[in-house]
Image 1 (cartoon, one colour):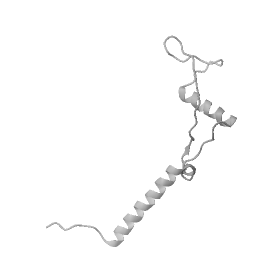
Image 2 (image 1 turned 30 degrees about the horizontal axis):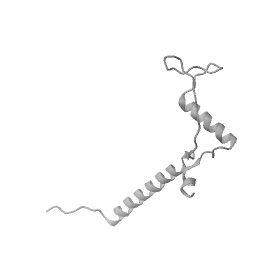
Image 3 (image 1 turned 90 degrees about the horizontal axis):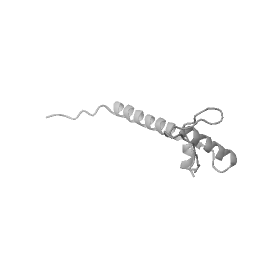
Image 4 (image 1 turned 180 degrees about the vertical axis):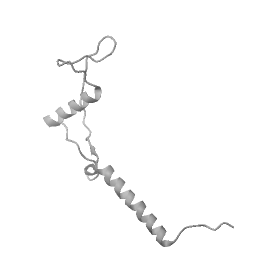
Length: 93
C-alpha cells in the first residue's frame, strides 16, 4: 500500500506562508500598475495609395499607438478624460 506523504507540520506551514506571500506580492504588483480610465478619443491619419501612413509636417510618421497616446494626453490636458491612476484605486470606486 502506498502511504500518502504529506510532510511535517513545519513543512506545511512554510509552504502555506510561501504561497500566501507570493499571492500578496502578485496582487500588490498587479494593483500598483498604472491604468487609464475609460475614455473615448478620436484619431485620424492620412495614407497614400498603398495604405502607408504619410508623414506629418515635421516628416515624422506616427504609429497608431502613438496617435492614441497623444490624443489621450490631449484629452487629459483639456479635462475631458481622467488621468491614469493605479489599478487599486479603481477597485475602491
